[in-house]
Structure formats: C-alpha cells, structure tokens
Image (cartoon, rainbow, N blue to C red; front, side):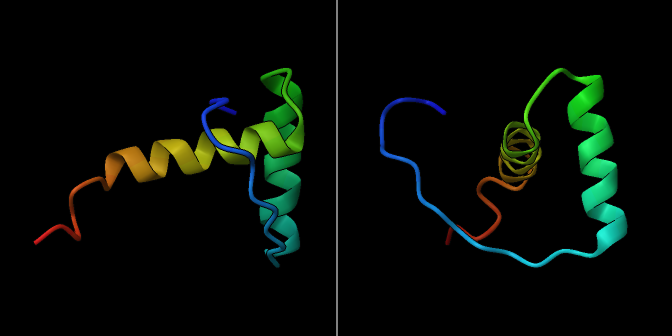
Length: 54
C-alpha cells in the first residue's frame, strides 16, 4: 500500500474463473493475491482517471 492512509477492508464476490486467473498472476508476479488485486485496481483507476470529473 502507499502508506499514506490506513487500508480499507472490502468484501467482494467475483466469478471463480477470475479468482483463479488472479491467483495464477499473483504467483507469476511473486505477489500475494491481495497485492495482485491492488495492482490491477490501481492500473484500472489510473487508466480511467478524470473520466467522471466535470
């Protein structure tokens, strides 16, 4: 995490095939599953930054 704010716990439900794919990616990238999900969400949010700003 970035160390600026305490982490927020969120519970989500995702399809089993996506979860398995994330687990494989995490192993390949030598990360925890949580770390892989955070990385994916960071990439997604960076890509879509500014879309909802008026």
